[in-house]
Image (cartoon, rainbow over all chains, first blue to last red; front, side):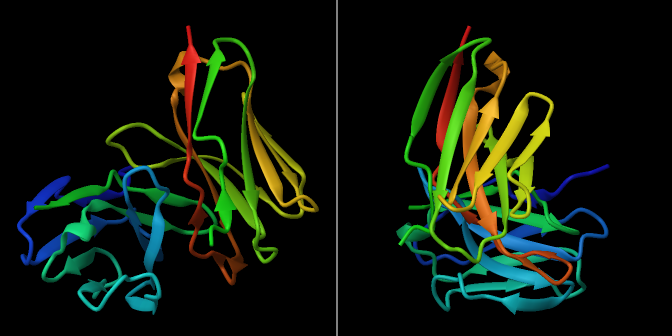
Length: 111
Length: 115
């Protein structure tokens, strides 16, 4: 079956621009996670949804970051007024039990 | 403070030999551990996991060992193949309710298997 998909795969934004990153999880997966991976680092947790409920957003670095999953399926991570330090790969993962399945990520470059 | 550490950023192994990747953690609340493999421009791919009630889990060429008293786990790949060349991430989590929660990842070890 289809895995987790993310779009766009690459995004270049000028500093101050708003961006929206999309995640399509595996059908039927209740849990959805967003991670940020800086160059040379491991992925770092941003936020977690169970169905449409955002149960943990403790990893979001600032109030410029906002995530939603209104119908409990597709999720969008929005970054307002992007800064250079936001440049990273943003990974989405979905799970039904213990193992999380990751999408290919969106590489965001802020100039 | 890094809760999950992979102290070797890179490792080179001859094809056919054993690869051993190591991971240390500090938080005793972690009770589920995973290894992911990552190729360039792709997301991490699940490889193998282990619950804290076990000390070993094996899947084909891959074996994960867990030493809870030392807060240490390792991934053994035998025999190593050139296609195993990738970055390997160790991750730790805590099981809650119906499944695991957020993962805490190490910084990764780049494995190169030489033909």
